[in-house]
Image (cartoon, rainbow, N blue to C red; front, side, top):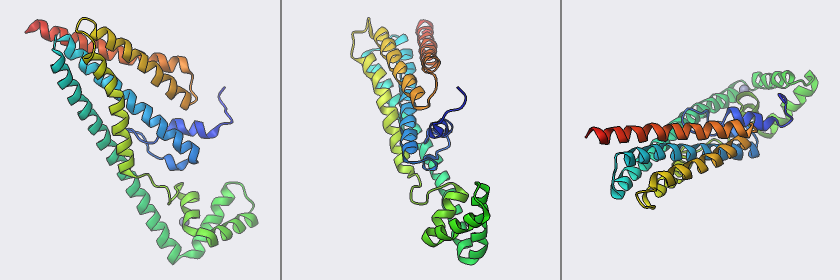
Length: 253
Ligand SMILES: [Zn+2]
């Protein structure tokens, strides 16, 4: 099944709304696509929180730490991770927004100074989409009368000037998503008795990674099995490595 009628979900896969290193362009799709992108970014953020905090606390537990030490390490990891995610998201979305605002300014200037050339440009863009010259011209004229900037922003730049992503919203969403994910391994390592805390944490983390892998695969219309498998394997390897490092460090002391 290479081709799918659901074009918007195909686009979602390639441009989630944020997360470090992702192209945050949720406004390029419709409102549903935008919401799915945010949801997907949230699941990925939570997944980050689960894996990084699980690796951290399991490693510290491997070095035979007390509950108080585990709580300190886990909380520090939670805060450091969530702020790092929020900062990265803020920077990336701000940069994106700056370049979009600059492009809109440029478009505004062009519309003010060379309206006829802009109308011709818009006509050409609709012809490129498949309209005849006369119809393209008619569409361009009517949309220019309605809202010239919006028409150019949408057709030429692929952005909606009313819906630029707010960097603070993106940062806040990342912070919350990571924190929610990080709380799970933190509580799982701190609450149970010392003899079973690592086993409880590993079980809780694997359960959570099954859920986040399943949800993100569904949101991206990808196959569920491989997505869940990769997600669980990644988390399990992270915990195995940090636990081994903790045990070795403890033995060396
Ligand atoms: Zn233009």
